[in-house]
Amino acid sequence: MGFTQTLVSSIRGMFPGILYWLVLSTIPFIVLEQLWPVGEAPRWRDYVMTILIILSTALRSLPLGIAAGILSNRLRHMMPWTPISFSFHRLDPVPLAGHGLTVAAMIVVPLFMHDCWFYWAHRIEHSAPLLWEFHKLHHSDERMNSSTWAREITFCKRVGIPLFLCSRWA
View (cartoon, rainbow, N blue to C red):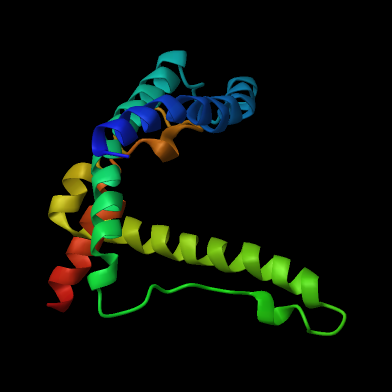
């Protein structure tokens, strides 16, 4: 499948997921914020603006992500290393805890790695002037609400942070 076909099918397939996971999952928090606000209740336009920023960021970052996936697939055989993969199957034989320990590890380890990445990425976005220029959109919300967490440009965490780290180690 070519770049254009992949892009079109990804855009078509993206909207149900965004609707289910972003908009519908935020509704209970919006209701609670309206019932028991901390300070002044967020306005409806604040939520709409954040959702529009999220959609525009997703649409703008999609072509770059698809291009990176196609390029990495074509270059994978030329890399001098093998991809890193994690397997928790060796935990299964542990007496009394085997399968439960495997499931717990499959949940806890990725969550821990994700939280570490986002914590340090957020710290770097505040300290690197170029990354702060992109990241300050996240802090530009006049009234914080349950959708503010997603108000950012995808470039920072996926491209900007690795480039920043490479420049520090080079």
